[in-house]
Image 1 (cartoon, helix red, strand yellow):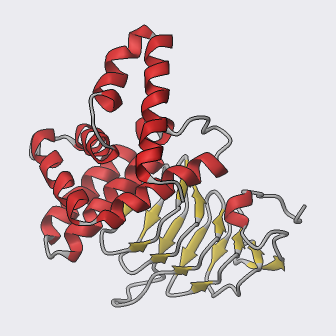
Image 2 (tube, helix red, strand yellow):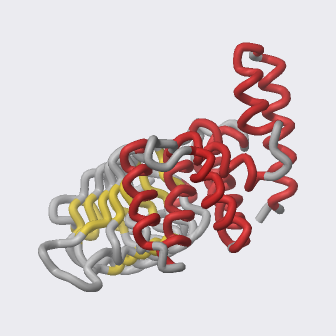
Length: 261
């Protein structure tokens, strides 16, 4: 994994170049990137502006975000891995600074990380407030109690819903319209558990307390109602096993074809 300081230097260099190339956005690049000493500072600035509201203005939001980032270095490490995931898996991501400034899936995910920290520290009301603002701003609804790993990419992201007891392991890729939801009015542990390296294609619905094994692939538009063994591809409504990914890590390959190619 790239060091946080190295990644931040790359992002600053890119912003400096872009500022010169497009003078109309010079103040934007300076305000969002170049005026900040660290990636944490830039991230808290961007999230606070995005989630600003009359009830909780940006200046107060930023204090909360800064507190979380300072208290838990693992969040910053996860942010770094999420940037790298975008660079490695999204062909539209040409520069390291793009997710921070322009990708709402990345921004929503980092907002969730702050909400999750608040939830774990018994600041539940504020965590829920963050969830609501993230959903309103980015059209991505992640319950702050859900457990998400690092190196996650949410491509396009509109309409992603992740429920309270869901677990998403490291290095997972998911696209717009994905749901990790329940399967009825059941309390307790009721949401999917997604293993490492899983690819969840656009519009897939995973429902109930089911396990998606590491390296599995969920085809676009599938409705998954039962557990999927590791290293298998499922498709359909309801989803059935239709083969196996060519790669042990389909989240990195981002190959959505069926049959496998």
